[in-house]
Image (cartoon, rainbow, N blue to C red; front, side, top):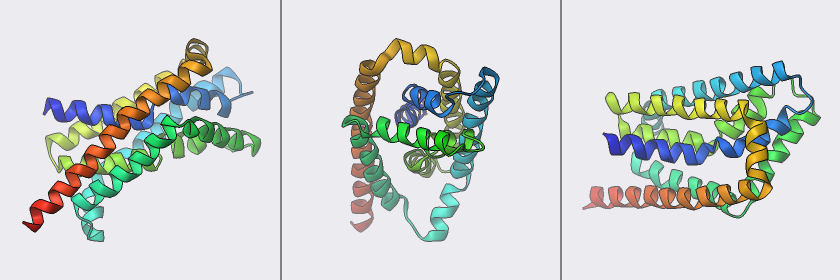
Length: 208
């Protein structure tokens, strides 16, 4: 149980990357009063957590309704996560997040807590796929409760990073953020390949 919880926490943490989202938060909330920034820092993780918790609760039911087996989703989700890790390693993800944040600010989005911070930066395709994969492995019961607790913990870390965004940006700098993104991307790539291997092994076991 402890190994499952640790693996799930690390996987979701790598996908969401709370520290890496700090510069995007600063870009999205640029020019806002400090009180508004704090409100956004609290609301965005709450919205993202709500989305991911719902995904965790109904994910298995949704897959059954669509006739999708867990092994198939493990393979597809692993490939999707590998795409996310590729963007992190080769530097496209931070630039994409910055563009989305700038776009939201330029268009005077009514609530940047929803877009782009909660969706798609925190509860994006990678996080949704990861939550579905973990919920599929967990089934129902204690493991599902662990997944929900992990989602809440990761979103809480995002909240803390948003609140401390100025300090994180100054501490890491451009080079530090780039190095961190690539290291986390390598770890996520390994996790994504493992998801694919597990899915293929499950399919092979069903065929034998």
